Image 1: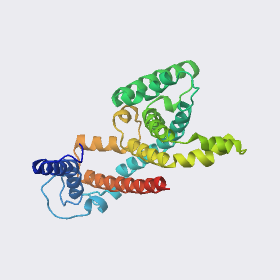
Image 2: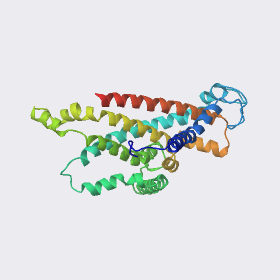
Image 3: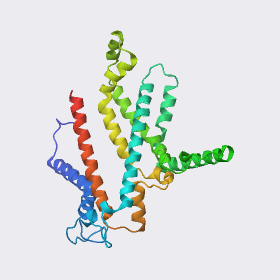
Image 4: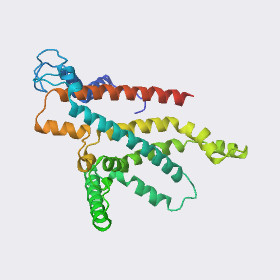
Length: 286
């Protein structure tokens, strides 16, 4: 839309109404979930029966709050551990891949770049099933022929990490590559001419330039891993992540503790997003 063109009052009002309705549609379920986390009811739905903190702190036979529920706390911890390793591995491999694809003399660049992006277009369910079948077949072969049992070749914590890493690292690759394309390579050439080693150039010049992208990609990779369900569902072992645990609770019938968990996740992710936004703006303004 060209700003200099005249716009009717009907268009202005219609546009404002559309924006308001869009954000109501987007945020009203989250607001209702947060409110129901404090509902004094044994069911995670309306009607409102009064304010209560039972679903956070209670530890009675009738009601067990989140901070007294060992199963939910354990699943949160498993999700945090999974997201931590996935984000670290994805940052390392994704950044190395971005450096590799930025090399002008890299052979088969387009074909390998297409293969690197392929996990993003493969449905998570297909990716999970494929990894499960492949690792189970490999694990069976190794055990039958060599007598070794590798836990990573059967549903387990590390298989979940591997499955999530397979597509989240691609996202990091795209983010870092986009930032790297804006980098002035003459800075590296000047540092090399002044006697700096290649490692010093990367450590002191390139990585500081990439810092906003690395922080943003790491934060999003952590959140993507934390909330992943489709791929994790097929690779999980005895220790369930939070999304899988919530799915099992909803399927079997749950209490408002599920709203309490959602409330804490919404608050924590919002704070993380705001901190990341502020930090990124400060880095870009330098």
